[in-house]
Length: 366
Image 1: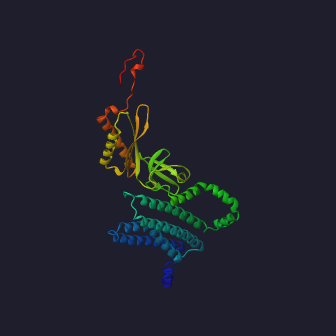
Image 2: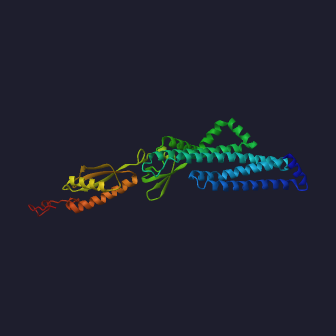
């Protein structure tokens, strides 16, 4: 190799050194890109008939691998190019920063690949997805926190390669009292959400796809990032809330332990309605519905009002959406039954005509 480089140097003596260095650097980068393209074309064809995981793995690592090959080619070119001490120092410093960025990129990709492998056994579209939602939420929050920490550490490591920044860091540590207070105040929102994210990942008051009632709105948790939560509302709007909201403020989680819910239907009928017949009809409607989960159906008179009975109907379903639809179905079919079978049981007002002036002794029922 040394003889080859010496012979190459003798042949290119007539060219300016900067031009030779430039050609070597550009040539090394081009060779690296071509080698990367050939390698990944071969790997893509090789795994085209394999499992989806392997195809995703090749796709996910393509760009970090390209960057790694370019850095390696550039490092080789810098070591053999006829550069001045200043040029060589600048390029080596650039390569050091590029190497730090490469390590951070590869670490992020490794975390992402690990999460894909870990979550392959959990399906959110399963009928009972409580365990899947738990693990998916925990993994995604921890991945986002890990990504944030990797980026922060990479930026810090890159900045510390500069001598003035390193000296400033030492002097900053010497006055850590005031600087720590100022830094803590400046980063309070970031640190608040960072620790809230860790707490959410551990305690899990919310999970991906949980049904929530928050700020008077109903929706499902669509995404949990390192700083905020996206709740997809029932009418497809999105509510964005900071992570700290779910630590500091009350909200309703309808799927905390199970996705099954009991729905309530309130109906007000005249005192003449036969409750036993109403109960039989409710049980028949629930039994005929594909939404009912065969767990809870109940009819109870919960109050006496001046003119009506308050009747509460409970029915259960496997999810919040199905429970809402079952309640609507129960209302529609039940009122149709009452109108058809017991029309006089609908709420009505009674008046005693004997109380009217000039009609003493004459009464007519409502």
